Amino acid sequence: MPTDAERDDETIAPPPLHPGIKYRRIVLKLSGEALCGGDGGFGIDGTVIRATAAELREVHALGAHIGIVVGGGNIFRGLKGASTGMDRAQADYMGMLATVINALALQDALEKEGVPTRVMTALELRQIAEPYIRRRAIRHLEKGRMVIFAAGTGNPYFSTDTAAALRAMEIHADCLCKATKVEGIYNRDPVRDPTAEMYSQMTFDRFLNERIGVMDSTAVTLCRDNDMPIRVFKMATHGNIKRVVLGEPIGTIVEG
Image 1 (cartoon, rainbow, N blue to C red):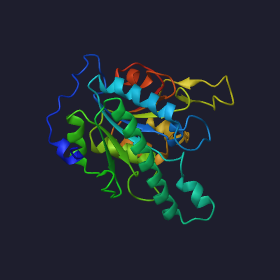
Image 2: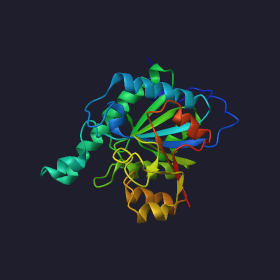
Image 3: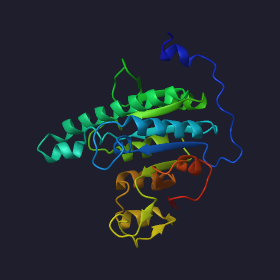
Image 4: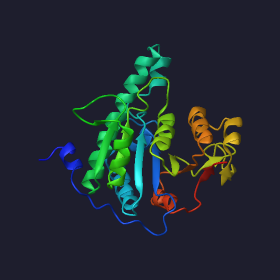
């Protein structure tokens, strides 16, 4: 069986570009909890990860370049470890390894859907994944491969949200897509208050000033300073990722 390195030299015909596509290249931020199929759950739900992979296959068929940053909260969360007295840097490294587990599981599901996929890690784990190299990641995308970015930024004290913003800038993405449990950004918690109203759009400065908890301020500041729009939408609704790539006005757009 050829290795990933040998397959990288193969000529691949990427899917043709859909004429209605708005965002040719995206970075999709998935939480670890999204892979376990419920709030406060643990581990990886096979049904959920297969459904996610099938949906991503549909988006890949549009000719979109898709980078994915996955969290690790369904296995271990660095902040939670630090809150119990663990050294924060040590806990964050453990959290990075949790994202690698999720990335490998997602890669397996995607490849079973026929989507060529590479996992690239910010920590060196050569036996199971490629080290993250920006230009190589871009080349994978251009060849029609989906790229999963694991281990965050490779540095403690930085969230996977910040890693997603950083990778979006590095690979020249058109949009950072943040998948959440609710439809978008609301003026109040929609789970607790059914009368909460969703914003269709929001500026970066308002997001930061109102301390919106959907994404951490470091990630949003990085996007603001580099004019990277953020689209916040509900992951559980089938077809939403495809709708985002095609430019449908779902969820909340943060820009300007």
